[in-house]
Image 1 (cartoon, rainbow, N blue to C red):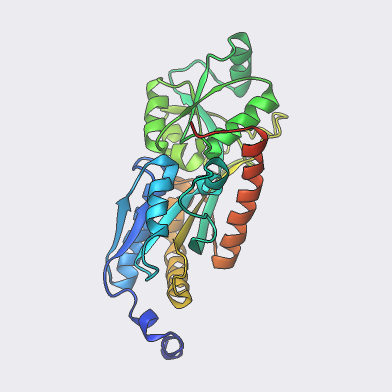
Image 2: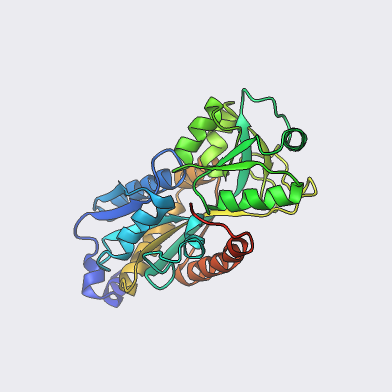
Length: 311
């Protein structure tokens, strides 16, 4: 411990010496907010300093993310990002930040497949039922996502193309409001992460009809993938943590070390895997940067090829 302490600059040894802010750019009720709150509580305990979660929502996560991009790179403001981070630039030529250059990568916490779900009161038991209904009444069935250009929106486009149907995408401001409307029957289906929907499926309020992963999910092992159905649709939701560009590396390294320690705790693993439905990978800064860059390239092409706009 003494050698570790001596290897860190004084400012990194002292960090954090005041409350740290975790920004969640999405509203409560989805998957980003509970992840931020879980890790904030654990880090508050391990570092003996308060970690505060602040919701700065709107514009599919852009408002809160931009706030962090323009914050001081002093280690006291971080943002929890969702997969939508990888499509902002392709969708918004006037995006107020660069998704790579304006941030310091910290960690890719985990990923999970998307699930197509429907309310328990709806008649659809399998995705074959959905295809039949969509072909019988084109352009009438609705499927919600967490915003125009979100991964759920893009995955819906790929699913429509693969199945030869047209489910009508409906944008929401977050996973919480979307889940509420699916359970209430205001929208026919949702395309959202298993993390946002697993608890509702387990509670019998939603029915999952198909997954966008390469394999079945440990949270919904009875639900087939679209690949099993012969539909070439693969899309994984993911969750990461970034700081403002030029955040000192010693502080980033200390945060990564602490994050890995708390993520390794059995109760945290259970919450991440079973409650939030993640495959936990806890990638470091370099691997996180590559993951985000690859996602930007892949989904940017889908946005361009399908002429998707944010309006």
